Image 1 (tube, rainbow, N blue to C red):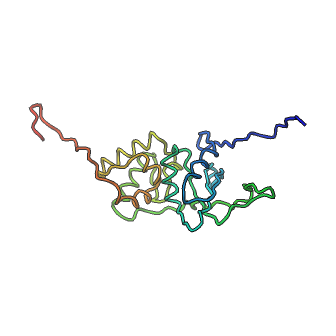
Image 2 (image 1 turned 30 degrees about the vertical axis):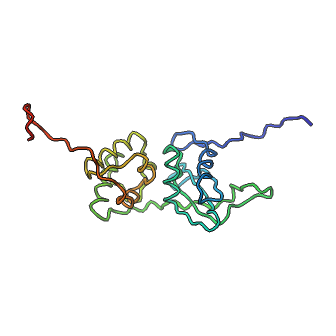
Length: 210
Protein backbone atom coordinates (compact mmCIF):
# COMPACT_ATOMS: atom_id res chain seq x y z
CA UNK A 1 0.00 0.00 0.00
CA UNK A 2 3.01 2.29 -0.38
CA UNK A 3 3.90 2.33 3.34
CA UNK A 4 7.55 1.90 4.40
CA UNK A 5 8.20 0.09 7.69
CA UNK A 6 11.68 0.34 9.24
CA UNK A 7 12.62 -2.98 10.83
CA UNK A 8 16.39 -2.87 11.35
CA UNK A 9 19.68 -2.39 9.54
CA UNK A 10 20.01 -4.57 6.47
CA UNK A 11 23.70 -5.06 7.12
CA UNK A 12 25.24 -6.93 10.04
CA UNK A 13 28.12 -5.14 11.69
CA UNK A 14 30.09 -6.37 14.68
CA UNK A 15 32.78 -4.99 16.94
CA UNK A 16 35.72 -7.43 17.09
CA UNK A 17 38.81 -6.37 19.07
CA UNK A 18 37.81 -2.75 18.65
CA UNK A 19 37.34 -2.97 14.87
CA UNK A 20 33.99 -2.66 13.12
CA UNK A 21 33.55 -5.73 10.91
CA UNK A 22 30.95 -6.12 8.18
CA UNK A 23 29.91 -9.79 8.39
CA UNK A 24 28.46 -9.79 4.87
CA UNK A 25 31.90 -8.91 3.44
CA UNK A 26 33.44 -11.97 5.11
CA UNK A 27 30.62 -14.17 3.84
CA UNK A 28 31.07 -12.78 0.32
CA UNK A 29 34.74 -13.76 0.29
CA UNK A 30 34.01 -17.27 1.57
CA UNK A 31 31.33 -17.68 -1.11
CA UNK A 32 34.10 -17.41 -3.72
CA UNK A 33 35.82 -20.53 -2.40
CA UNK A 34 35.03 -23.35 -4.82
CA UNK A 35 35.01 -26.02 -2.12
CA UNK A 36 32.07 -24.47 -0.25
CA UNK A 37 28.37 -24.69 -0.99
CA UNK A 38 27.18 -22.31 1.76
CA UNK A 39 28.64 -20.27 4.58
CA UNK A 40 27.54 -17.86 7.28
CA UNK A 41 29.63 -15.76 9.67
CA UNK A 42 28.52 -14.73 13.15
CA UNK A 43 30.04 -13.26 16.30
CA UNK A 44 30.28 -15.45 19.39
CA UNK A 45 31.80 -14.87 22.81
CA UNK A 46 34.55 -17.20 23.99
CA UNK A 47 35.25 -18.33 27.56
CA UNK A 48 37.29 -15.20 28.28
CA UNK A 49 34.51 -12.86 27.16
CA UNK A 50 36.21 -11.86 23.89
CA UNK A 51 34.12 -11.40 20.76
CA UNK A 52 35.29 -13.82 18.06
CA UNK A 53 34.29 -14.30 14.44
CA UNK A 54 33.00 -17.80 13.71
CA UNK A 55 32.37 -19.13 10.21
CA UNK A 56 29.92 -22.02 9.73
CA UNK A 57 30.47 -23.68 6.36
CA UNK A 58 28.97 -26.47 4.28
CA UNK A 59 31.31 -28.18 1.76
CA UNK A 60 30.26 -28.50 -1.86
CA UNK A 61 29.05 -31.93 -2.97
CA UNK A 62 31.90 -34.41 -3.04
CA UNK A 63 34.37 -31.99 -1.47
CA UNK A 64 36.07 -31.91 1.92
CA UNK A 65 37.50 -28.77 3.43
CA UNK A 66 39.65 -28.02 6.45
CA UNK A 67 39.80 -25.01 8.73
CA UNK A 68 43.44 -24.38 7.79
CA UNK A 69 42.80 -24.14 4.05
CA UNK A 70 39.78 -21.87 4.62
CA UNK A 71 41.80 -19.64 6.94
CA UNK A 72 44.60 -19.33 4.40
CA UNK A 73 42.09 -18.46 1.67
CA UNK A 74 40.36 -15.85 3.83
CA UNK A 75 43.69 -14.31 4.88
CA UNK A 76 44.57 -13.86 1.23
CA UNK A 77 41.56 -11.60 0.66
CA UNK A 78 40.66 -10.07 4.01
CA UNK A 79 42.45 -7.93 6.59
CA UNK A 80 43.48 -9.71 9.78
CA UNK A 81 40.57 -8.32 11.80
CA UNK A 82 38.06 -9.92 9.40
CA UNK A 83 39.53 -13.43 9.25
CA UNK A 84 37.36 -15.77 11.36
CA UNK A 85 39.02 -17.22 14.46
CA UNK A 86 37.12 -20.47 14.05
CA UNK A 87 35.71 -22.43 11.09
CA UNK A 88 33.06 -25.04 11.83
CA UNK A 89 32.26 -27.51 9.05
CA UNK A 90 28.62 -28.68 9.04
CA UNK A 91 26.57 -31.00 6.84
CA UNK A 92 23.87 -28.35 6.54
CA UNK A 93 22.94 -24.95 7.93
CA UNK A 94 19.77 -24.66 10.02
CA UNK A 95 16.95 -22.79 8.29
CA UNK A 96 13.81 -20.94 9.33
CA UNK A 97 10.35 -21.70 7.97
CA UNK A 98 11.04 -19.05 5.34
CA UNK A 99 14.13 -20.89 4.07
CA UNK A 100 16.52 -18.34 5.55
CA UNK A 101 19.56 -19.30 7.63
CA UNK A 102 18.51 -19.58 11.27
CA UNK A 103 21.50 -17.97 12.98
CA UNK A 104 20.05 -18.56 16.43
CA UNK A 105 20.00 -22.31 15.79
CA UNK A 106 23.66 -22.58 14.80
CA UNK A 107 25.59 -24.94 17.11
CA UNK A 108 27.74 -23.49 19.85
CA UNK A 109 31.31 -22.98 18.66
CA UNK A 110 34.03 -25.20 20.10
CA UNK A 111 36.78 -22.78 21.02
CA UNK A 112 40.07 -24.05 22.39
CA UNK A 113 39.82 -24.66 26.13
CA UNK A 114 42.91 -22.56 26.79
CA UNK A 115 45.08 -25.51 27.83
CA UNK A 116 48.74 -24.59 27.50
CA UNK A 117 50.77 -26.79 25.19
CA UNK A 118 54.53 -26.41 25.38
CA UNK A 119 56.82 -26.32 22.32
CA UNK A 120 57.84 -29.75 21.04
CA UNK A 121 61.13 -28.88 19.35
CA UNK A 122 63.74 -26.14 18.98
CA UNK A 123 61.89 -24.42 16.16
CA UNK A 124 58.66 -24.19 18.14
CA UNK A 125 60.58 -23.00 21.20
CA UNK A 126 62.11 -20.17 19.17
CA UNK A 127 58.75 -19.26 17.67
CA UNK A 128 56.99 -19.34 21.06
CA UNK A 129 59.70 -17.09 22.52
CA UNK A 130 59.28 -14.63 19.64
CA UNK A 131 55.47 -14.64 20.05
CA UNK A 132 55.80 -13.97 23.79
CA UNK A 133 58.33 -11.17 23.31
CA UNK A 134 56.21 -9.34 20.74
CA UNK A 135 53.00 -9.81 22.74
CA UNK A 136 54.76 -8.87 26.01
CA UNK A 137 53.62 -12.09 27.70
CA UNK A 138 55.46 -14.51 29.97
CA UNK A 139 54.75 -17.46 27.70
CA UNK A 140 52.72 -18.46 24.66
CA UNK A 141 51.47 -21.97 23.98
CA UNK A 142 51.86 -23.51 20.56
CA UNK A 143 48.08 -23.44 19.99
CA UNK A 144 47.54 -19.85 21.17
CA UNK A 145 46.22 -17.48 18.50
CA UNK A 146 48.56 -14.51 17.97
CA UNK A 147 45.74 -12.09 17.23
CA UNK A 148 43.44 -13.30 20.01
CA UNK A 149 46.29 -12.59 22.45
CA UNK A 150 46.49 -8.97 21.39
CA UNK A 151 48.47 -9.17 18.17
CA UNK A 152 47.92 -6.53 15.50
CA UNK A 153 49.50 -5.44 12.24
CA UNK A 154 52.34 -3.52 13.89
CA UNK A 155 53.18 -6.40 16.21
CA UNK A 156 52.97 -8.79 13.27
CA UNK A 157 55.62 -6.78 11.42
CA UNK A 158 57.86 -6.94 14.49
CA UNK A 159 57.27 -10.70 14.82
CA UNK A 160 58.21 -11.27 11.18
CA UNK A 161 61.44 -9.38 11.82
CA UNK A 162 62.23 -11.47 14.90
CA UNK A 163 61.64 -14.72 13.04
CA UNK A 164 63.92 -13.55 10.26
CA UNK A 165 66.65 -12.55 12.71
CA UNK A 166 66.44 -15.54 15.07
CA UNK A 167 65.62 -18.37 12.65
CA UNK A 168 66.81 -16.98 9.32
CA UNK A 169 63.41 -17.73 7.82
CA UNK A 170 61.30 -15.45 5.64
CA UNK A 171 57.63 -15.29 6.75
CA UNK A 172 55.22 -12.99 4.95
CA UNK A 173 52.61 -11.01 6.85
CA UNK A 174 49.91 -12.79 4.85
CA UNK A 175 51.31 -16.19 5.87
CA UNK A 176 51.35 -15.13 9.51
CA UNK A 177 47.72 -14.00 9.26
CA UNK A 178 46.84 -17.43 7.86
CA UNK A 179 48.84 -19.50 10.35
CA UNK A 180 48.17 -17.40 13.49
CA UNK A 181 49.73 -19.95 15.91
CA UNK A 182 53.13 -21.50 16.56
CA UNK A 183 51.85 -24.86 15.31
CA UNK A 184 50.38 -23.18 12.24
CA UNK A 185 53.77 -21.74 11.33
CA UNK A 186 55.59 -24.93 12.26
CA UNK A 187 53.31 -27.02 10.02
CA UNK A 188 53.91 -24.61 7.14
CA UNK A 189 57.65 -24.49 7.80
CA UNK A 190 58.66 -26.69 4.89
CA UNK A 191 57.11 -24.15 2.53
CA UNK A 192 58.99 -21.19 3.95
CA UNK A 193 61.89 -19.98 1.88
CA UNK A 194 65.17 -19.21 3.53
CA UNK A 195 65.56 -15.51 4.07
CA UNK A 196 67.55 -13.95 1.27
CA UNK A 197 68.36 -10.83 3.22
CA UNK A 198 72.11 -10.76 3.90
CA UNK A 199 73.25 -10.92 7.50
CA UNK A 200 74.68 -7.66 8.80
CA UNK A 201 78.40 -7.72 9.47
CA UNK A 202 80.54 -5.25 11.31
CA UNK A 203 83.33 -3.63 9.32
CA UNK A 204 86.20 -1.29 10.03
CA UNK A 205 86.28 2.20 8.52
CA UNK A 206 88.57 0.78 5.86
CA UNK A 207 85.94 -1.80 4.93
CA UNK A 208 87.50 -4.90 6.44
CA UNK A 209 85.03 -7.44 7.85
CA UNK A 210 85.41 -7.93 11.61
